[in-house]
Image (tube, rainbow, N blue to C red; front, side, top):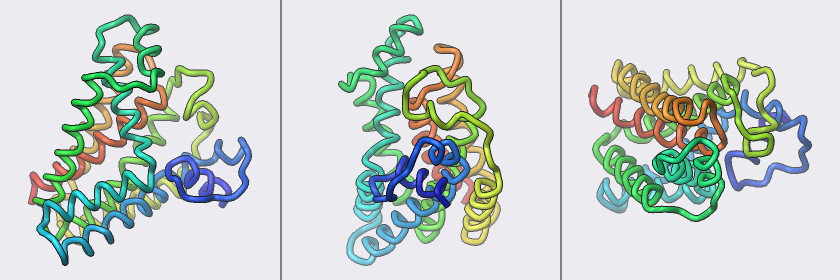
Length: 240
């Protein structure tokens, strides 16, 4: 379970106890499970908020709760990736821009659009929103783990540099299957649209990075999570 604790420490701001580098090497296999917990927390917040406010406001509160528990880790990656790759500069300079903590205009626009897409999708999903949100959290982070291990990882030091070894797939596959079944139970075959949207969103982030940089970084992984989650929400919504 030390790998699960390492995944919790990496993906959230929650306390996970003392850990070492070997624990983080096992963390990716638990990304989907921890993602389910994050999504489940957001789903509970959404359900509670929907009892008090209209769907749009409940969706905004749920998204904000997710940002708080994760420290906006993935959103920071999205902004950095779009700033770097959208600059049109050569790969080395793009990587330098991505490392810069300041957010440029491209990154700010990407964050605004991502927030709007999440909130509007959740508000429109209606009664299936909690289950879809929970599953999206797990599946999008499972996609991060697969992308991390597929590589190549470009930075000798960075968010994912210690997690590029062999992937233990048991917990990853179990959590991903559970997430998919959760949406199938609540939204039926619309889950197929969600999985397609997930693949398109996460795949777009990886494809852009491979084309421009020849590999992935922690920022690309964060962007893939955000775009994959949005793709899943929008894919389910499109098929309802």
